[in-house]
Length: 248
Picture 1 (cartoon, rainbow, N blue to C red):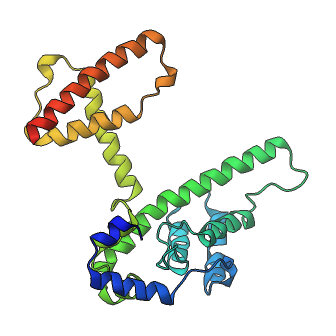
Picture 2 (cartoon, one colour):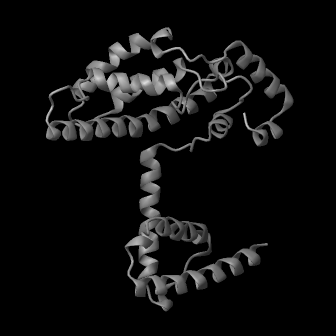
Picture 3 (cartoon, rainbow, N blue to C red):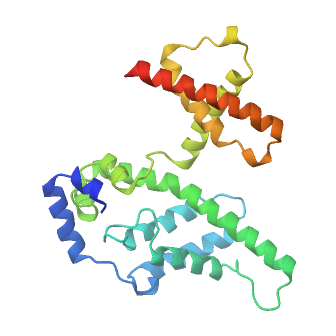
């Protein structure tokens, strides 16, 4: 746990978690040594082989079970699935599903397998975002399970904060970002007299421009456009500073 998180955490909760972690230190053993991991693998493999219609929900639900089997660096459930065991488990799952080149495969075959492997991996990750959010939220109705697996974390909000997980499923985030970028696009091509914005939408408008800026690719701009962009950024920076000061 980092120092900042520990600083604002109640001492009782911190002591409870430290005791829990001391009793459940993660090991560097392979995932095969974790009870239940092979059984989940056996159920996940047929789903990988049959996921032809890009429907990853059922597979993601099975794969997510490993997030509760494997531990993160602090001995808690690996909800972010960043542990060595979790990553190797998925790698072995995709290998077993045939998404791995073998000696003698042509360059074209290797390229196709790499693309298919990336597609399945991303599909699992996106679908599992919804599964993970639903699971964490369900713990608000199951305090016994929450305290057993996440000692000292008294709500789903605290779990999301502890793991630095955005409490929205990936599809919700994509949808919100798309709406925000649509707002930014409309404003970008509007005339000055068309820029009347309801006060309540001010935060959304600022967020829309922030998201739009993140999509720009400066390296693809010619010299003239770069100069124009620098000028607009300078004026925008000044406007943002003025707005921030007005809010103080």
